[in-house]
Figure 1: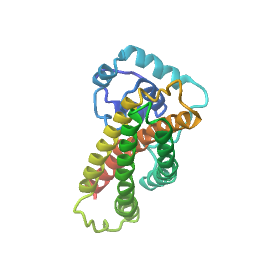
Figure 2 (figure 1 turned 60 degrees about the vertical axis):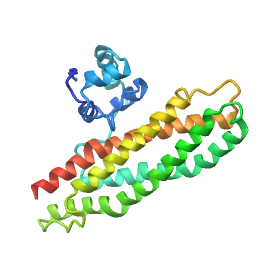
Figure 3 (figure 1 turned 90 degrees about the vertical axis):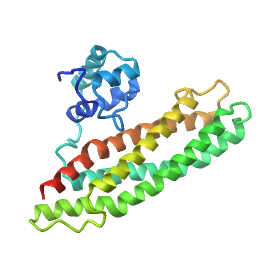
Length: 239
């Protein structure tokens, strides 16, 4: 693929889904920051565009990188994927990590005061994500699926109690920004999830899990912000 500094980060991921691995490695925000030009995103991360292009080419040519084409999936398929893969994972991990965080703080908080701050941030993250996902599952996603179904069946669009799909989408994206900020604060407090020398197995498990949780949320938010929501808005505008 041809990369230019003016190309948007989200467009790179839409053309090459495997690029998310490279962006995670380089700490380039491709979900909430997907609308940034690549040159600006690289400058923020301290990465040369030419180096990024080389790494993306290596990923593209690597064997076994077939991926579902989210850009061509139906909106119903996208919603199903987000619910089954990301919402289930997020809920399961929040339930697992909240008590693990408490355990690590109790054991190591005296020597590592940053853990107290991380505990508060993770509590806030969970408190934000739970109602956020509930609103998607109960209101926004069913509307998007019904809107697509009615279009395929040549029926009138469903009644939108929120006026236009743009309104809940705008709110969800604002909440995604808050989630992104909390994830960045967690990473900063943990020194990029670097376990200290005296970190026990629980400490190591927590940091590995939090980093995986962050990566999954990045992919989760990318699918909504950069694919599902724009296509839903476009479909509503064409009705």
